Length: 375
Image 1: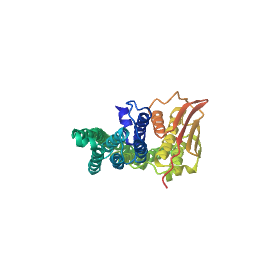
Image 2 (image 1 turned 60 degrees about the vertical axis):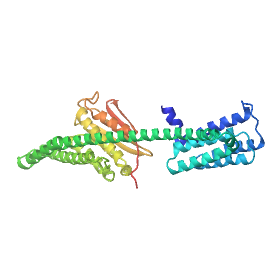
Image 3 (image 1 turned 180 degrees about the horizontal axis):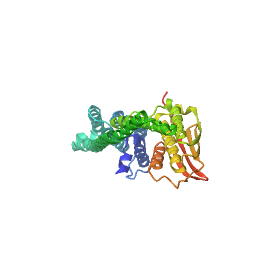
C-alpha cells in the first residue's frame, strides 16, 4: 500500500522514531500497569529516548548504544526497563529494514547480549526468559528484513519494467527512423533531384519561375538535412540535442523569414540576438514556431499578406509573436496537425501557446521558458 511505503521510507525515520518516543513518554507519564519507576529507571528511560533521536541516522549504533544502556541498567539496579526494551526492539526493526549483511548480524548479537544481561536475575531462575528476551529482538528484526526485501523486490520489478519500456521505445524509434529514411527522405531527395534537373536543363526565361525552382531546391535540401539529423536522433537511445545549433539560430530564423519573403510575403522581423544563448531544445522550438507560423500565414492569408514577427528574450522567458493582417483568405483554424504539434512542443518545455483571430488577421503567440545553454 502506498501509505505503508511512505511511512517506512528511510527519509521518514525521524518521524517513525518520534511516534515511538511519544509512546514512551506517554507510558512514563501514565504507567497504566501501575508499575513503579525508580531513579535509575527514569534516567535510563529518558536517556534511551534522547539517544534514540541522537543516533536516528545510524541503526547499527542505535542498537549498540541502547543494548549497552539496557545491559548497564542491571548493574545499577534498574527495575522497570519497558521503555529501553521497546526502544531497543524498535532499533532492531530499523536495523533489519535499513541494513544487511555483517552490520545486521553484529547488531543482532550485541542486542541479544544487552537484552539477556538486563534480565540476568530472571534468566538464572527461569532459562525460558532468555528465549522471550531474544524473541523480543529477533521478531522486529525479521519484520524489518521482510520489509527491506519486499521493497528491494519492488524496486527490481520497477527497474525491469522500465528496461522493457525503454527497449520497446527504442524499437519504435528505430522503426520510425527507418520509415523516415526509406520513404520520406527518399521522396524529398527525388523532388530535389528533379527540381535541380529542371532548373539546370530546361530553358527557363521567366526569372520568377527560376526563383521558385531555386527556392524549392533550397528548401528541399534543408529538409533533407533536418531529416538526416532527425533519423540520427531517433536511432540514438539517448539522443543529443543537435537538431539545431543555438549559435546559428539567428541565421536559421533569418533564412526562414527570407524564404517567406521569396514567396511574396511582406515580413517585418524583430529577432533578439540573445536567442543564441538558449539551449538546443528551446532554440528548436523557436525555430519551428517561426517556420510553421510563416507557412500558415502564406497558406491561409495568401502570399501577398503582410506579417510582423517578434522574438524577444525577456528574463526567464522567450516571447514569440507572429501577427498577420489578413489577405486573400482569413483562416478559421489550422486544419492539419501543425498547431497541435507546436502546442505540444511548447507545453513540453513548460510554456504556453495561443493561436486566435486578431482582426483583421491572425495572431500566433507563445511564451517559452528561456532555458540557457550550458556554458
